[in-house]
Image (cartoon, rainbow, N blue to C red; front, side, top):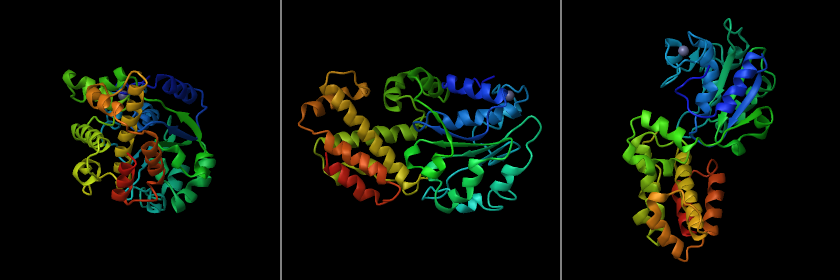
Length: 327
Ligand SMILES: [Zn+2]
């Protein structure tokens, strides 16, 4: 009854299945937890099971195949709303009539479900839902029509509008186990020789399945190591600056770099306390930083503040410079 290609989160998936079977799923669910642990995939499994030819989410049939890779915006029982553009916002156009789906999202939510199906509305990166788009959805989110269920997915629940958050039932996600994350990575072509480095950086997420993303994370880690060691910002910060040609929004890109800094600083602290470090392949760098007079709290505080302010302050370059100065 579960897609074998989806790793981890079994207790959550079992509870959701029980609720679907018992006719107890409805309203709006908020899938909240770290980025890249498969929350969206678990949300989609609900719709997949209904379209699976075996009704089990077998992961093999033509019905299941629609949920692999790039999933269409509209399927008979699923509508996907995702952020667009450089700003990475869910625009009102995506909610209003006809932009995304004939008749608009709210009228889609009110159509009768196909036999044996719900109508699932998946809102990806729900923290990007704001202003007019959010207001337009509030009433439907609060009391969706019979058979319709909103699935909001976010790794930044604290950045969501409280009016939206309070209308949802939260389903909390945790990172995957290292073994589960690596099972997905090795299926995606990662070789055993890279396991230690990949696992250390990924930390139970699937963020670095793409070799380019992994390489960038390694470069960013090394950039922070250099900056913490006293290198000049202009000389070392290259990998941290957002790539303007990338699909990802600037704030998303800068946010990832800042999270790597937090990971590094946390590990320096662990090293100083004699605890097990996560970034084992970078042990030599950590040891050097741990023995240096580097103070951890100022850059940590500055990085958290920058992460909180990211969506308001898109001047990535100066934001990173300020954080680097606190090192
Ligand atoms: Zn199937």
